[in-house]
Image (cartoon, rainbow, N blue to C red; front, side):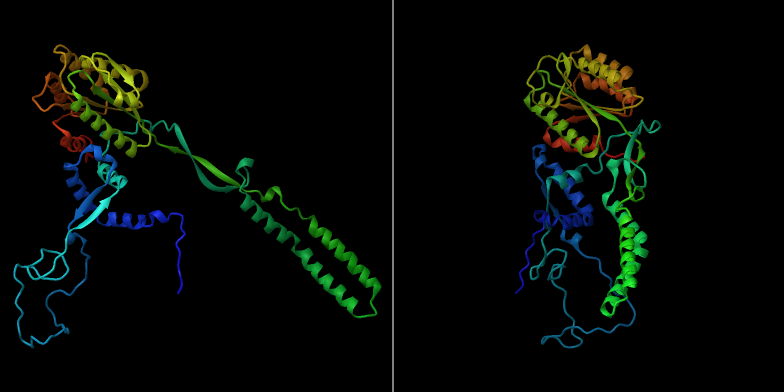
Length: 422
């Protein structure tokens, strides 16, 4: 009996193609199941996949069949209980037995929902699929400042580093065969004639000398054909293709004041973690600026933004001032798509909230593509929310949402960044 051993290098992921085909085929059912699963999912489970249930009826294959009416002949299997003309009663409960969609009857058999386990990558891909940064425009389209080098066949001139060795040697071999063909053909004929002359004594010595001289001359001519010539060289040709570019920056502003207790800071960090994953997965080049603030705001790196324990009072305008200054200094609005995501409990110094409103109206919101503010509070809205409502009335791209607990993070995030159909 023959034994087959699979030694493919990618043997650990043999079913990847089948999984992708299955996901493409039942994408609507899987996305619906993912949406339902997100309602009860904690963001701490972001590193895990998800088991989704797909109704058995959705897995049925489409079939072609005869329509009603017309004349048809059919042969049905018979048994010992019924004869021609008998009528079989329908099973109780409205559902038949055997495999197939529908609820199982008391006497028949049904089929459970199909359980499919998504990996972390598959889950995140489906989760982020219909999300996007709102109002993103190609700010650098007119300038065409970036070029991408792409292959464009082969050329007979170029840089020595771009020589295509295989194609050059093939050309050289073809040229040698073409140029040396008359000499090699005549060489074989002369060798045959010389051999025939030597095999039939007495040999004609003068004719033999002529043939020997001709053979040496032909061999020298054949060897004179150069092994490779500059005509044979072929270079990999590359051209610069202009690429439209889109530059975007996301400002992440997090309130770390004393009123933000540990649970609220945890919710804010979870929201920004989800936002960070979304940006990194969906956009190849996007800059992220992290700003923490209490009474004083400062720009920090990713590590300090998520793990620093520094805290203090609350002056939200300090973060807005820093954000505005950074935007003017490093991200001119003429060439950058600017986005802002701010998380706070809304508890601000009373006289600072009107200052925040004025800053947003005059210096920030008119120049950004989208501003998302989430207020993390289970109670009534704070003073900052009331001030921001005036901004929202004047600018439709200013969004405000409230988060009460972990269950609100996914729905609020999807609502803020869902794809808008214009």
